[in-house]
Amino acid sequence: MIKEYNQLEEKDWKRIKSALAITNGKALVLVHPFYATGSKAEMKKLKEVKGQDVLDYLFELKKELKQWNGPVFVMVEEDKIPAMKEILKHEKKDVIIVPTEPGTPTPHGVDPGREWKAFLERLKREGLKKVFLGGELYYKAEAGETGCVSGARRLWSKEIAFEKIGLVRNPRTGGVKPAWVPEHEIGRTGIETEIKENITFPGKRLTKKRRRR
Image (cartoon, rainbow, N blue to C red):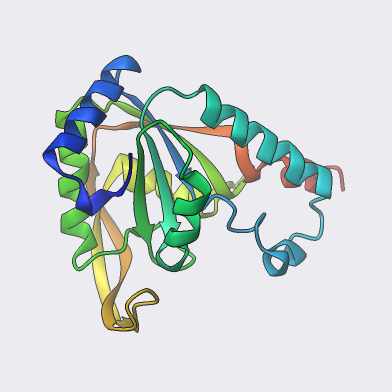
């Protein structure tokens, strides 16, 4: 099953519930996988990252997907969803696509704050307790963590109020849609989160190089 999170039917929720029961309430979340590693333009911005770093990350990511036997949530920019579905079409596990705004893990939607909250509450009712996060981009330093993976961690663990900042063109339909940004935290979701650094990019690969200077 590969479906977008706001298109799930009752039969899909039953599958998710069964999958969560197998993993004791744990799920895997991949944030913008292949965002940089699949783009020559983006890779040029990461001058300190070597080709072997990319291969190591992709190897770990592929291995994690193969070994994981629970539900997988893939947060993907709205215009990259068709390509992501093509990449994942042979996956036999349950994959739920979460459309996001460009360059941010903010969920795409008519009212993402309300829709995202309702989605997380339903997941908790079906047994979700903890998510492991990986993907792109992720940076970890003494000052803290940054990038879309850490931003997604915030969205899964904390209840966020979103602010509408205007209108933008929808890349898939050509129509106009609201643009939203996370504004402030208003509570906690009750979902535990953990970042799996071996499946983040550039992650420690870039951090280690900077620390040696």
